Image: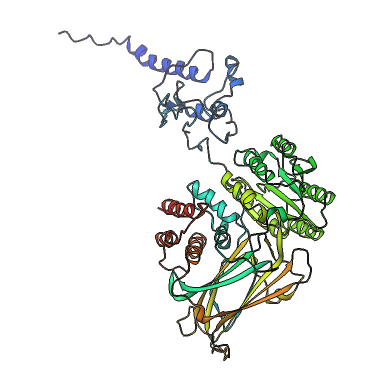
Length: 613
């Protein structure tokens, strides 16, 4: 075979020049845009310039007149983050952020180097286009929306030595919103923030078989003492309060104002659509003597429905159905208008209540938390109470919802699904509607001769000063018809090893007392639903009342309290009593479970174990 003839000296310059000419032509093509499609590049390869500064659709229509040198690219447009990567949002994001991977990609040239980066999504795959990867270190186009939920920070109760502080005083609380809010988070596969956990609201979510009050008393009080499930060296004291539960037909007429947030943030399915269905459930329980008004707020406020009799359900339903979301959130102005409507239809001997339904995201007008709370506290003196119904996530202001209900002499509930709406607004209609006792305070004095230490479980943001107990001007919690309240104390008897070192210079010796069998003395103060002077109830807590085997309700309440402590402070006082033991304790105390609430609790414990893995 003949070897090819060597290049002649005349041909050598042309061979050297040709690559340079080709490179110049290629660079010119890269720096000049025309309507001619670029040469195809390997699949999955994207240009750095194209990824960072892809032109908008309107710019592409006039590409022939647009020239952009490689070394001076146009500044990138602001990133676009749609709430969900679906529909038109995908196309808009692709146009504004970068070219889809399935488009032909080019090679970007910087100096003499050819830069390329492979995108880890195959063309035409389900992830291409909508879930395109970025190059050059830019963020993913579909970042999770910022979580702006707000919760009140509270310090958990610690162990107290009786010789130093023998008296514990607090306001009762019938709220249950913390439990259903935590349920929403666990169902979404996430653990709740610690400040979202209020143990007393978890415990009070469940019905217990407490005895009903006798004769004209607004509520009955019981106590139970048994060994603490998580600590063999201590006892658990349960205080149970059961309010009277009159028949719905015997309740006085109700003047109700629905105050509904229809701002743009309420557009999500678990907000305004769920809210409307929930209110319709409540309307179905109304009686002819009841009247309902409907007030809305967004950028402004409006009276959608003047006071309307409860038997005109079709009219009320139609007013609720027409609600649409849009605009900002003038919550303070809405509250003012709602009180005006409540005063317009005021029932002198009846029930006067505002039901505020919102995600709590006030952003127009008065939005300062303390100002709103003080305004509601001032208006409650007019005889109009305010309860809150929380909805939604992401921007949920739970601190505002819980504290407004407290200031308004009402209750706070969180509605995460229709089952919860049925529980709060239908099954517990009388509790939601009517109050049987106001400003209910509890004070427990421990006997230092018999009790060394104690720790209250929950009620951190309901603590009162000792002198507040007898001061009728100090506000406290309300009990609705049929409501139950459970308070728990872990106590350590004298003679057992304590968790707090005794004072060196203080008198830490047990005080002598003739009440040898008393562990403590329980006092309650309350006002009648329409009274101003408080009344006192007193009960001794006796040592000989300790049970070797706790009741079913006691054990289940203890399990719920342990679960709340495990979520709220990582089980600081639970030792090795873990979630599996909490579940076993609750499962063995499930009982009849008529409404399935306890079975659902077991499922939530299971979910929390999986989330923590």
